[in-house]
Image 1 (cartoon, rainbow, N blue to C red):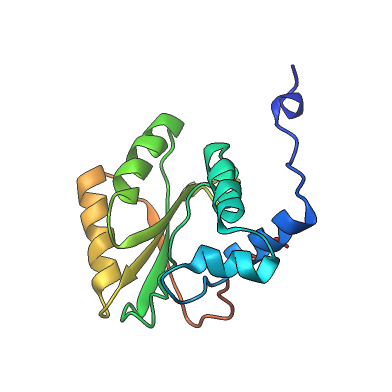
Image 2: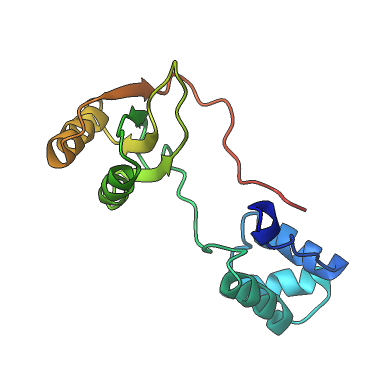
Amino acid sequence: MSHTASKKAAPSFTDTEQRILALAGADLPDGPAPFASIAAQVGCGEDEVLALLSRLKDEGVIRRFGATLRHQKAGYGHNAMVAWRVDDEAEAKRVGKIMAERPEISHCYIRRTYPQWRYNLYTMIHGKNPGDCLEVVRAISESTGVTDHQILQSVRELKKISMRYF
């Protein structure tokens, strides 16, 4: 079986489901019943909104549903993406799990390497003060033994929005 043959087909959605997902994928309405508010805007019942989101979560289409913290507004104005070089794939997964457990890390990815760029494990680290990110890098390097890394500090944020699918 080819790799592409084993992938599931992308789900299709009704117009109502697309409107629900468009609203649920944006900032949720303020108030005690945000899903009821979405339902009212779409013209369906709150139970339909919750059933759709639950079904998609159960099917793995939605990985998680939660709030996004605007780290700079919350006082975390310093950040750095760190590219780490971990040659063994199993080791990269093991080390990545350790890194992902740190509260200062919001993103942790394994990516492919290239002859001119051998780094394969990436972390996005956030700190409140200058030097916080460097301290996290030092601690991670010490605890994992991974010493080959590049720190890519943000100079300026050009765009930060949630993905809109519908």
